Length: 92
Image 1: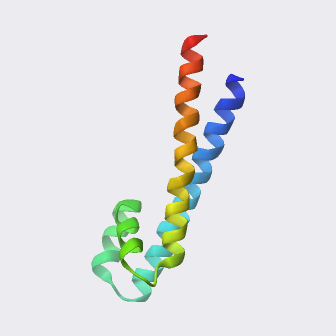
Image 2 (image 1 turned 90 degrees about the vertical axis):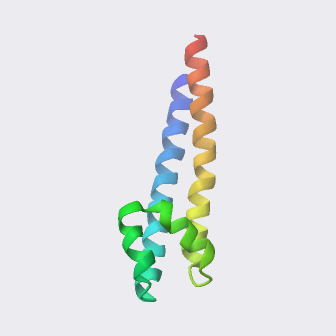
């Protein structure tokens, strides 16, 4: 049971990170395409911390918004599985 929970935690975490990464790239491409340098330059350094507000505020970044929110929603099961795994491992 412990190895299954660890595999699920790792799987959801890797999937969430990958989807958020592609969301950041999509938001960066939209910002660069619209020549919004004050969004694009910090996005290169800070990634999702700048990409998420940009995607939520800009109506043209719908695809990036969808990817970023999906990645965040995938991180929730990863966190739940992590807590369950840590609890079960500690109990045994």
